[in-house]
Length: 97
Length: 97
Length: 97
Length: 97
Image 1 (cartoon, each protein chain N blue to C red):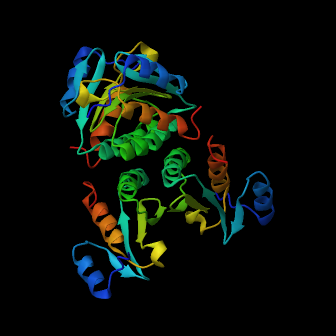
Image 2: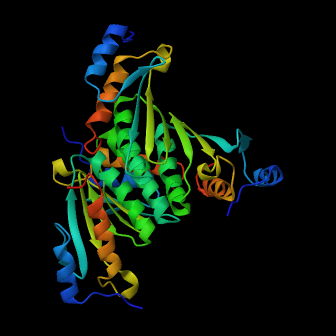
Image 3: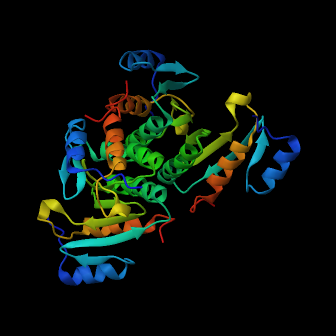
């Protein structure tokens, strides 16, 4: 089975995701925190969500920022429902603005 | 040098520390979070503060709670200014209520 | 269903668990690391195992040590197969001696 | 003061750093772990080193890999002694092969 989203479904999904964009076949967002310490703690918090969904981000940390890129490798790097779910989980982390 | 606090200084310090108590020669507080995941992320966040002050807590995690006990071992388990500083740092973590 | 272990099953389980003891209706072990930093990283690593089993430890960190206590609350603080599983997972973390 | 390394000093520094390369004015290495969980725990462990040196990496995690890029922004993205120090610290983390 393949849960790849259509372009219309991606547009719809983004309406519920603050600050996320559709770029190069991925859902992307840059999170900015108050410090490196906070950025790292966010990664730990978010990693638990990734593990529980068994779906993982590509993410880059530079000091107080974390740039997240979500797409699904085993369907050829397309956006799937798993990517939307993971983005939603990231948004629900209580201290993320 | 010895920065042990007098009983009066401890009373004064506690006025600025929400939810902390003086128990058995230590500053103590039980933090409750929304989940185990959040409790663990707090520990990571707080651990950076402990490292930067080179002063470390005794703390116990049970599911969504973290019970913190602060005292200073090398002065015979008394409360010192380092304990107050660490408690203040824990309070400043942005998502801690 | 209740997977509480009999005393004989606990003795048997402990044979495969290096350094674990049976104390006060729990499986316990004190882990000692090279530093606070390493102790905290172990807690993060082990927390992923706890989450994936949906079974969580009582554990206390003091500087470079992590004292773990495993028992199962909802069966009245007895040792169950979940505790043995979690202990086994902790033992498999690659850098734990 | 400016601790930028000369090309010769970079070559020399790399001799003591297993698996690190000089690429695009940075010291780079890709670490591969046994799992996402282990990769994340490494990032926590390494983050303490970054904080204690007050020098931070650019690093990207994709599942079980962590790609690290070290250079010094405030001297115009050149390699400095701080980058070498941080790389050395990463190498000393006990469970990193």
